[in-house]
Image 1 (cartoon, rainbow, N blue to C red):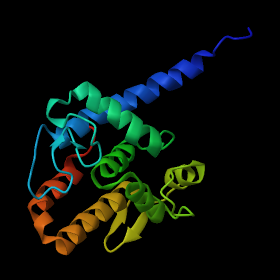
Image 2: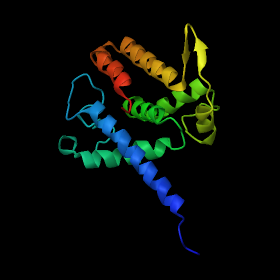
Image 3: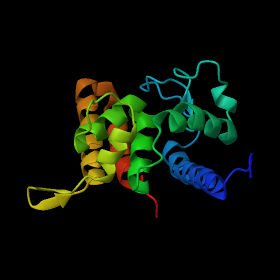
Length: 184
């Protein structure tokens, strides 16, 4: 039996790939095609891949396949979200990481669930805190980790638009994005 890889290893790899692919369907809907908006600090953008952050990429001719490869390497793999039980929460964290920064996204969820340190790294302590989070009663409702994360995203975008009025043009889209970032 030496050298034989157990079937469970392949099952895990397939599940991981399926979740990434499932997330990418939503991400591509959120990001859309080619845009070069004068108020976007990322500059020229296609499928959410911005020239500012990927200066060596030919953004105008970027394919979905190449964008997906960049998302897997620069976001999915580095964010390390596998092991979180709620797939919609994974999608929200991944999407916010793409749109507002990987570290900012992980720090937001760490603060919500009480993971220490708040360092922007999604390791076993953070995942355990996320998976064991008990919804909290607040005002007249009960809020899950995903509810609080979405609220945190909204607050971030509103604050950003207030601090940088030139970004106000993007606020309605950002807020809409939060609500439509989910699996059907």
